[in-house]
Length: 188
Ligand code: GRF
Image (cartoon, rainbow, N blue to C red; front, side, top):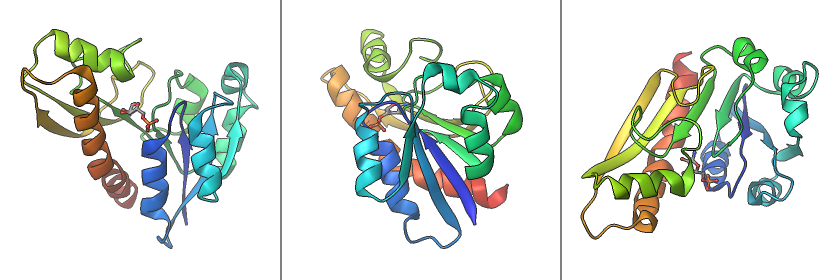
């Protein structure tokens, strides 16, 4: 059994989609949804789907015996699905090429600290980009700089707003993220 833990800070639509995708898979188990926000909607989604969840503090995540021990016991792979904290080095070093993130733009554009959610879509709009997309990548010690695994693009027109851009990105995420995770774990 391949165990995946999902780290998420927000609504959790990606987390839910991933959980649904692997629900009937006999070889893959989503063991935990872990969040740094006690009121994140992702925790309600996990409960509804029967997946264990745990909230940890920003301090827990950095401590040697905090989150790391749980992950060592409960995860072969870690998926970041809208997780807004930096993953500390002790976790990155313990899970080399085993931590996968999704970013709602075509990296290396629109990445880095502070570039998340609507901040990304507003910047894309301000620059009149003709296309945007998603980037699924491995996580290393720098925000949004790990090796790229997969990108998908969507065209934009002058009529698009940050909100419609978010909707287009959401569709790409729903279509590709679970499938790409599956590919990564099967070839590892
Ligand atoms: C997604 O757009 C994802 O690409 C980004 O954060 C957002 C999370 O949305 N990293 P949700 O919590 O999965 O609904």
